[in-house]
Amino acid sequence: MSQQAETLDVERIREDFPILEREFDGSRLVYLDNAATSHTPEQVVETIAEYYRRYNANVHRGIHQLSQEASIAYEEAHDRVAEFIGAEGREEIVFTKNTTESMNLVAYAWGLNELGPGDEVVLTEMEHHASLVTWQQIAKRTGAECKYIPITDEGRLDMEAARELITDDTEMVSVVHVSNTLGTINPVSELADIAHDHGAYAFVDAAQSVPNRPVDVSEIDADFLAFSGHKMAGPTGIGVLYGKEHILEGMEPYLYGGEMILKVDFEDSTWNELPWKYEAGTPVICQGIALAEACEYLDDIGMERIQRHEAELAEYAYERLTERNDVEVYGPPGDDRGGLVAFNLDGVHAHDLSSILNDSAVAIRAGDHCTQPLHDVLGATASARASFYVYNTRAEIDRLVEAVDDARQLFA
Amino acid sequence: MGLGSDMYRQQILDHYKNPRNYGELEDADIEHVGENPMCGDTIKMFVQLADDDETIEYVSFVGDGCAISQASASMLSGELQGRTLASVREMDRDDIIDMLGVELSPMRIKCAVLAEKVAQDGIDIHDGEIDIEETTTE
Image 1: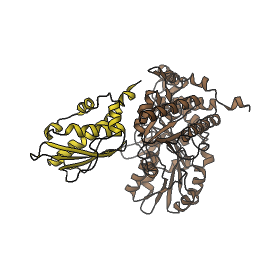
Image 2 (image 1 turned 90 degrees about the horizontal axis):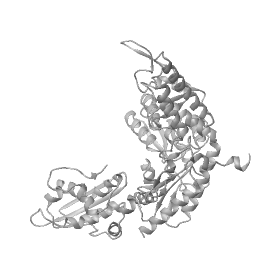
Image 3 (image 1 turned 90 degrees about the vertical axis):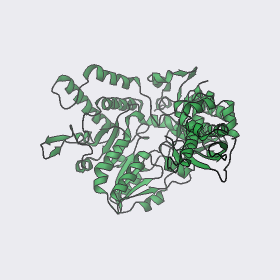
Image 4 (image 1 turned 120 degrees about the horizontal axis):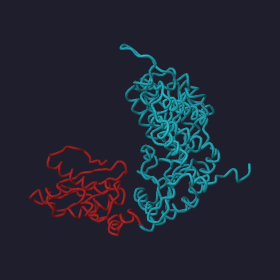
């Protein structure tokens, strides 16, 4: 493959995202908050518009033409998403509202029924609240206990500690694939192996990995894996729960109602086949179809190229920020991280920094990024975070650093 | 320049870098702490009352957090001196925005009003109207 073919044609990609042309007080938007939500390309916006213009209908319950078209498109969207992450088929792909709901689905449908006193759920210190709070509360209700794999000084998982924490008492190992705060890329396949050696399930929070690198559920051997559409060029309102078919078969439903049933009488009901058993009520039809288009869009660019592009941007941002002596950057070195950099500027609260950056039309995230316990470990109440996607450039990182200089001067 | 730069006028930065009435006060008549959990801003205020148990004689504070929250506490500590508890109870967010003299983006208003809320809750605790350990903003 030539060098040309390996790198992204960012200028051409940017044409698909008209929002990036917005200007504020004469400054072109620099959008570096992609770990929170990514922008949506014209192709996906068009898919959404097309759905409502041409074949909007409820699925699985109409004989008429529109319902048939919508049903087929919605079902095939599951196939497309399955293909995107290497799942066996639509039976393993449940459409939810977001990663958090995917996590809660398993916590309620499996955790509440299977966990009890003496059982343990192993998490990491770098878990997002989506998984940390969910398992913490399910543990409280069931009498199970949560344990946390600690992080090293460099912001990686202490794998030696992980091997000690995961025991035959462990029923679930729920780990984040790429940390949304540290940028650490965790060895989820190895952790899944350790979990399986002890008869536990492995749940991978892939909200920050599926959007920007090739993820193959069979390679990881994850039992469950969750991610959100809006962080991967898709719309809000849709998340995905991947689950191994035989495990999903054995679990109780999470929500009851229409669509998820097969046969109902006044006394009892039976459940629909996978994945519909877990998609009660009118599902996320348009969002699901749009998510499939987002998968198409990303695959057309190439997930390996996207991964390389993000790694390059992360490394450059890491270099530019760490060469300053007034910035603390969190997480592993620049050449080994996901496409985000969280940091603090000495003497300037992250919220002040974000407000000042906003003056230069530079959009970053400031706060605890839904990882309060991790921030406690880091000894910071908040941090600023720049996160990248397919359309970002090195020049935009230069704009970020210039704006950090402005903040430095203002607070000098 | 946009909203943000306006937020950091010289007066605000000056109060942030050189907070007035900073420090703990022993034997304060009113002492109350609050935090803004989303940002990690914390403010603890100390109020010393005159003999009438109604007029504020002196206010100090300690705290940690963003420039808006800390400058607001610093300015408010000066503003409150000589006022009555009743008049402080009647203050609202517009009074704080007027005091700061800057336009605040909606997300930052909670930073700005933390000190005011701590002072008001402290007064209510003093008067036995509420019973809370700590003030939190959302």
